[in-house]
Figure 1 (cartoon, helix red, strand yellow):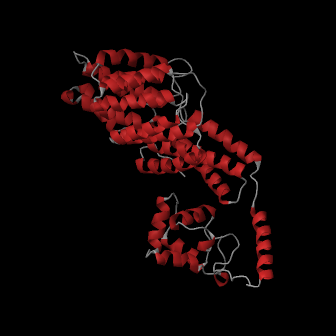
Figure 2 (spheres, rainbow, N blue to C red; figure 1 turned 135 degrees about the vertical axis):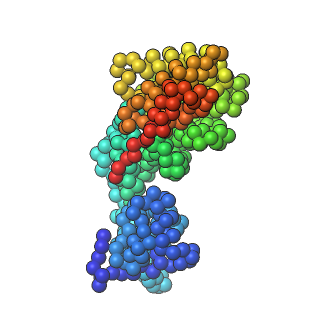
Figure 3 (cartoon, helix red, strand yellow; figure 1 turned 30 degrees about the vertical axis):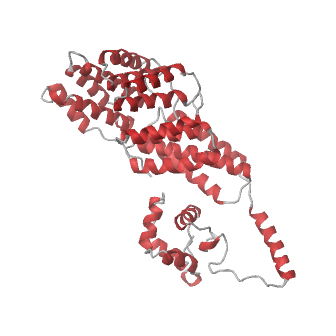
Length: 414
């Protein structure tokens, strides 16, 4: 809220917090931007310190996080003067009366969240869990972002323990989706930051599906960044939150890492765990369910890394057939793209390679609409191109190379 200049009340506490850390206003703005603030500038920080305007709830929360202080210590408590309040009288009666009045004021600060609001947020989270598999990620991201900001604002107020736990779970689920969508739109930095925040929420509530999903996603981000040992560490941490919903995906992702590392025995054991624990469960807020189709893809991926091209091709063809069933083909675009690329890798891994067949499959994947493009598919296609390096002069491989070069990810708009 902007106030007339002649009514501005400077906030010395906010300025002192900055100066005590030898920071400029621009450096504070940069720090807030790293924490997720949009539009933070040194000039805006200066306005807050001079009292020309006050930070909104979202910015107040980030300022507290940045300075590791509470709102009162920064002169940001609602309706409180910026300068430190004068101490109450040391007269015992005066102090007791003051403390009693303060208790009444504190009790009145507590407010309940409208149950309808929580119901709407719960419904949105359930919808996002479904739409992460079928709706363009750039389209879905702003919707998740808006809900998360609303949850953050609700958490700024004093709430009952029941409401706070509910909101914390929602915050974890929403930031998990922000991390997942950011990663699949190729922003690894944003994905890591959202995932780190999602883990804070998840750890607070201890909900098994959310905890396992966040750690599995952190492992996926690390895997695609080439950090294989870190990926394994994250997956082992996810395994501590063992539950039937997440168990097969964790095992499949472990098999993938072991396959890349050439650890055949460990990879085969992880695949056996995945197959043994496949279950048919409805979608939950977190990882997508691990289906027979995704299991076939996991087997194809890992076996290809282990050099078993012919066997990998059998599973890859089964995965593609399952993804192309009526009623499924127009959804699950990311999983279907990866299944097709597993099939594309197989001809290259045969004893008698057929690079042109591999390139044709790759070209088909690259032809999907812009809004259905994802980072995991782009990475897998890049791996395929590396495998085709010895045949770069073949026309089909040249065309695939050009299609991959033009494969751009659509970015969300505000």
